[in-house]
Length: 428
Image 1: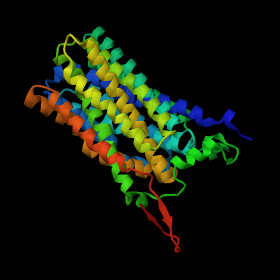
Image 2: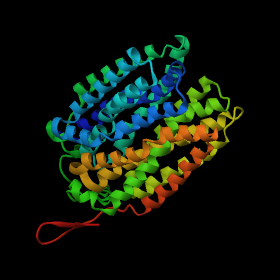
Image 3: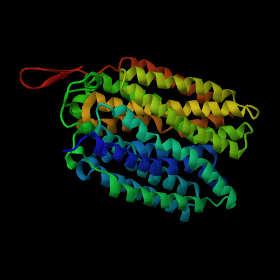
Image 4: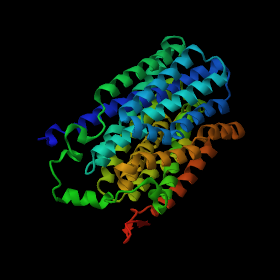
């Protein structure tokens, strides 16, 4: 008889942690450093540079329904493998083919973006939702801390490699290709689809036993078996979509332009790379706090608290100068914490509101809609800088978006299903 001591769910979290680290951290955070070296050789302006991140974020989110379909048809493991294959293809394109700006847009924006989409958020969060209920927020948080460690290691490491090899960014992309191959092997060996496949139950319990923890979990998670079509008709779904935009737009802008912003105010490349690393490390703390709160309080309040980090971080970022490096580090940590915190809340919230069965498609739809809205963040940031020769208006835009997000999340209450006599239901 299985029990919590040999419950595979926590081991699966370890495998998912490494997959997120490899498939997200190095192509994105390491890529952010690599691309600043590529930018010089390919003679790109900042608008084109930002467009690459816009395309990447677009192709992470827009195929979300295809990713959900892949999970339904072929499973989580195969979906991870598809993601690793696309990342590998994109990095090889960047290393061997890229010689013009449009090559950069295809390789980094389209191919690597699609790979990150298939190889990270939707399959990872689906696995966590299937395997956990009582500790869903914490499991999601622990798993997603991986990208923080990857960024802290990846950005400075890539900068060190590039500084040591004379700025050979093609070699750096080959390293990322090898990392993508390793991710595919991990997915093949360690990802398991459902606890039932191993004769286990959600959370590793032998049977449903009433307890204070179970009561709390039930209050925070739906008992109704929602369908995606039903979920889309609820008010809370659309409030979550707005919250998702507030979660991701500031992050997408920051990832694309933070290093350039710091260099523009006179901070040297090594310190700028360290600030990017601290940004991702801040995400670790944010994820853990957000995940813990999601298991303790109403999702909307946990989510709203996370957005506050963006406020403070934005005002500090505006004030950064060459002589205030510590301020830059604190702003980076707060931005990282804001994203990590809110992103864990976002994914866990969808699972708690609509359940494991509907989760892949519902969460995929949230990511699709927010990708359409947020993907322009990189190019918007570039155009704002080109127009004003400053990133201050871009950080002010982030603040405005966060205000709208908090207002929307205030109304994102747990959706309720009312069963009527003919077996159908009405949702609110």
